[in-house]
Amino acid sequence: MNSLGSQDLVVTQRFAFDPTDNDETRRQKQAIFVVASGCSIAGCVWTAMYAAVFGWCLTTALPLLFVLIVGSTLVVSHRTRNHRFVVYAQVFSIIYITAFIQWTIGGVFASGFVLAWAFCGPITALAFFPLRRSAIVLGLYLANLGVTVAFDDFFRRHGLPVSEATRSVFFAMNLSVSSIVVFFFASYFAQSAQGQRLRADQLRTRLDEAKAKQLGPYTLDEKLGAGGMGVVYKARHALLRRPTAVKLLAIDKIGEESLARFEREVQHTANLTHPNIVAIYDYGRSADGEFYYAMEYLDGIDLDALVRREGPLPIARVVHILRQSCDALDEAHQRGLVHRDIKPANIMLCRLGNRADVVKVLDFGLVKEFGENSGVTLERSITGTPDFISPEAIVDSSTVGPVSDLYAVGAVAYWLLTARSVFVGNTLVEVLAHQLHTAPAAPS
Picture 1: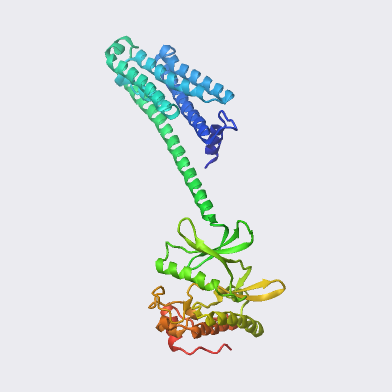
Picture 2: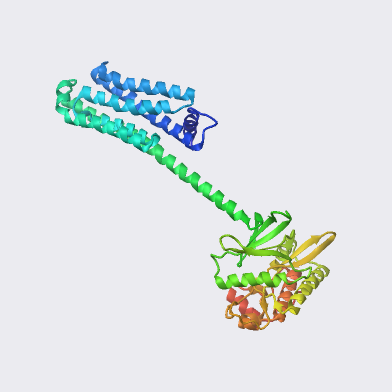
């Protein structure tokens, strides 16, 4: 907004300002200030126009009288912080004074656009009065209009002597001034309506955010990351107040099969008790039916980010990381489970007390029981990450077993030692073809 627009906005907001006003009262005060000020400016224009044509007479004094009445009540309303004074002055002055102007000049076709100015009276009443009172004001306006039309010839004969050329000038000037006034009001109320819609949208967004931040007993604080299976948030329990990571399934992006697999991930992972596997605290569904589970919050870095930041790792450190990862997978394999998505991003290094480089294996979202054929997993689809997927998972995912996880661990070791993937290709198909048919190059 430019500086002029900002100043206008400040003046509008200051009119009859009362810090105890609610939003609706503030809106009404700003609106009546705009309406009354706009009509007063139009009254000044008409005063100057009539003075130029007739000199100073009753017809010239009538629009000036309107400006004085409405201007005075604007001051009174501002000082008393009560905008009702100017509302009533605007409604009744504009209806009757414009009618007198019409009658003193005569000729509805010559000066009838003054009645468009008078129509701001019913509009003002409709904006600030109850519907029944607004209907009364509209009736008064229509009565004035009816009298003007019915006695047009009488007013023409007894009104001020005005030549046809002057009447044409009146017609053009009244049309232009009335159009400007109407356009001014329409622009203001359109902008005001747009502002109301924006505020309503912002309020709706805040309500949605507040609703989304509360998931069962957990309050979501910030988004930690997102993947194919869902979004992970940092959260805290309403009672325990401990930091927690909450994973939420994006139902709109995946179907019922993936939902079932996501729920199964929780059940399988919750049964694993190895210290190098992320611990599951709780799971459930939100009021909207979204499935989530709460797990321990890990303050650390995953192997993918670690290697990208530090480059190839020392052999001793790689061995330390792989030993813990294999121990974690060993428990899963002993329970008849295979991870199927071992990759650097799913292995995190944390500090627990004085112990550094403590491994936590994450995301059992693609976990599968040996020999499982429940129809939940899409057996003909490729499950896993291409750079770390085993050849058998590419050919037939139903044959995936513990050796598939070990193959992925080997690919992770290659990444840790070289900061490169085992195979590199320009396309996904090329990478998968290398996994099937190409012998890997030695790390060094």
